[in-house]
Amino acid sequence: MDRISVNIAGIVFAISSDGFESSIHLARAYEDFLSSDPPEITIKIHNDGLPIIIYRDQDKIFDSEMVWSLYLINGQYVLTLKSPSSHHQPYRIAIFDEQFRHGDVYSNIPETGLADLQINPLEFPLSEVLMVCLLAQGRGLMVHACGVDDHGRGYLLTGNSTHGKSTMAKLWQDEAAVLNDDRIVLRQMDGRFLMYGTPWHGDYSGVAPGGVPLEKIFYLRHANTNETIRKDGIAAASMLLTRSFPPLWDGAGMLFTLDLCAHLVEAVPCFELGFVPDKDVLELMRNHLIQEDEELPFK
Amino acid sequence: MTDKKDVKKTKRPYQKPQVEEVELVVEEAVLQACKTAATTGPHGIGTFCLNPGGQWCSADGS
Image (tube, rainbow over all chains, first blue to last red; front, side, top):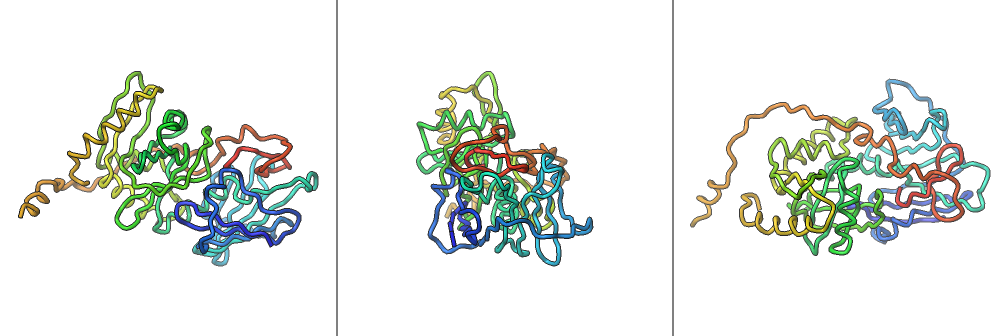
């Protein structure tokens, strides 16, 4: 039986396969996340077809209306992956217990090309939806962001598509460690907010596990000049929330998420950052950090 | 002995709770689409995402 463990944002996932048809093979981006620590989450992979499940509307918790749906059936979460090209029929199903601690992932494998087949069982969107569900249980929040570890100082550069996350990652790549250009996890550990990379990157493929203290949050936007505007309170929390992946289907999870956003923007200085894509902005971010450190009431 | 005074000085003024409506970018917030899915197609070697209909996505990390 194949087994691989990965540690993403301090959560250790053990993925095992019954060895049928193919082995587990994660994408290259997972290499830095391999772990030998005891798993918190266990996932078993089955590549011999999908279980028969009767879907009822009253069991449906959430429907992304495109690629995934979540059901709660007899005390188990059922995550179905589908797409227009599969005529909206599931091509992969994941079944988890109520805490998302143990799960089985079932796939339909096409008959052609089996010999060369290397399955990434955590392919989009399964891994990310699972992470959102796990974080919502009091663990943290996944943010649409680039994360930079500038020699122990963590900068979160957050924004939606086209706001400049990958551009920022390329500007920082020779200056600091880029944790990820698209998906960053924030967690509060021992009274500090830590920033973690994930394997789920965008256009810039560099990733690192991270775990660096979060020092500053920048809300990115392209501009004609480099400038920062201080954001705090509701504005800062709202901007963070709208650049995150909130567990919209989970009431308790949403309360936790909103609370986390509020605490985050109180503890960590936040800035809207207009920037032009050259390295001048990096020094602005660094120097701004030093100047602001002296004035911050919450440091 | 300056601790108490300093703490008072840095305390934020009370802000009355209020309802704030925020607008999510839905397709991004609910993980509707893989950013790199445009690369979907047949590939020779490596690690692939299995897409419906036997197509492969080689987007590393996806």
